[in-house]
Length: 401
Figure (cartoon, rainbow, N blue to C red):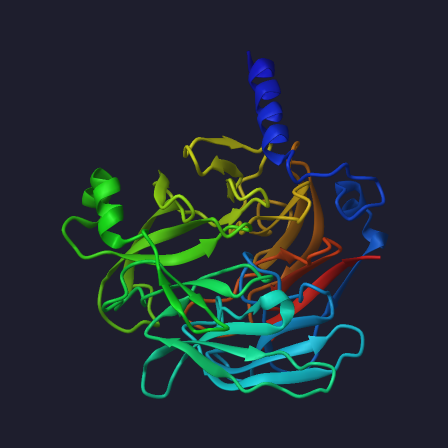
């Protein structure tokens, strides 16, 4: 019986990877065998300056779509809450400051800085001196070397995660105090136009009344932390309710659930009651969440075979959808206390290769610490992650030679 179930599961995973997975040659970065060869993978610091250099999150790559630049939040503050948006040219090592005087919620996601418009712009959010939250954007220098001036795109919202090839990004009201911005909105960072969607707080309550009643009762709710699918037609998010107090606190709000929505069809798709650390499959249908592959159109899921119980676990696919990467506390996998692992795994078998094991017990002294948050480059040849092995949390890269 177990063998029948396993065969069915493998068939499911192959079917749900088929639209983007390619045949992985042994020497290809899309093959686990390549990452298993220790001599074939080089790990290095992206920027060795004495400061924090924070890659934001596993849902977005810090490398520009063309592979020229690496984006990070730089800070000399011990907590990592104040600093600059910088890019570093991979070949020359030249660094360019895109924005200064940036304040963040924590060192965990920094300024949610990410590539936009095919790498021509960078978008991020910032706490202004008057306490307002602003979604901001800045042009990346062109061949003439001219640096753009950071501009406010919209106020009173925070930035979700979009797609680097495009100008439209999801935004939402701050989870501890959303004010009038309780619904999902999209913003075009080129025009500044804010687009309302059908993914509203009222709609969530009407569509999933039992879940909302169980988790929030009659408390007000809002859309929180939206992540746009690769084709930009779907989005998933968490639901939040303010709890009061300082936003730099774990008690700022209550946050539960994972709701998927179809922006094109303007309809709710599914609810997954448990939010782990979800990320989109390149097919824009499936969601990888701590070893579960969830079909967002139905909410049904299957587990990747032999997917280990990783403590931490921020998983995401490579662009070809043949591999996943994630991070985990090393204890339980043969590592010492305070260490973390970054691994790459096969999406069909769950077999993994250890890419890097490192001390992650120090770094930015934020109330919400930075995790490694591994993410692939657009060509799948490089893997970026944060390391906190000293006074600074700094982004590293593992590259297939």
